[in-house]
Image (tube, rainbow, N blue to C red; front, side, top):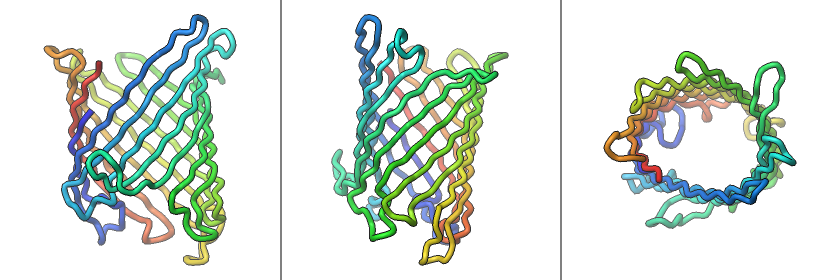
Length: 274
């Protein structure tokens, strides 16, 4: 998938410091399934690459490489799937190579159905994060991230609605980087025709840091809202080819003024599946 993006706030900074930017991105999602008789092994990857049109915005560029291995065994695990993987990420892309390697993450977890009166899909995940520049004592962001989430899908009248919630706990090496977050979300998928579709979503994330930062005298607390809409058009004459357009608006309010911002995003993409 390749896309063209525009944002009025590429660095996610306060409104009086906003700078707009345009960038291209490329996403490659290879995958292969191994049939092992009574079980199944899924190997998948992600390659994400960005390039900004302004050279001074190169530090905002992202390159991410990830490989994931999933295991499904209905006889042993039911419909639960175990997954594990490894990712690296960097910035300032020179060609297809990131000049600055920012760090890596090792992760594993699982997901599957759980009926608590309503049918839920539950996900539990553990991530070990190691950054190249760990920061000074007390501010080292390296550490372990624990996440649990649940999603409820309701289908009817041609619509698909998703309600989700989650909790994150970050146990960082630096005491001022420990935090916990609550996530809530709602999504609506609306098929307009056999070739056109519309998706809308609202996401909320409330993050609270555990200890007061001596530099500010308070423990940081912020609230993020994101509203988005995405349209899809599938070309009838070329199987696997689709065009996508996305509009999103994000706000973050914080008890630290320097962390407060608003940002708008516009994106057009072409997707080819084979």
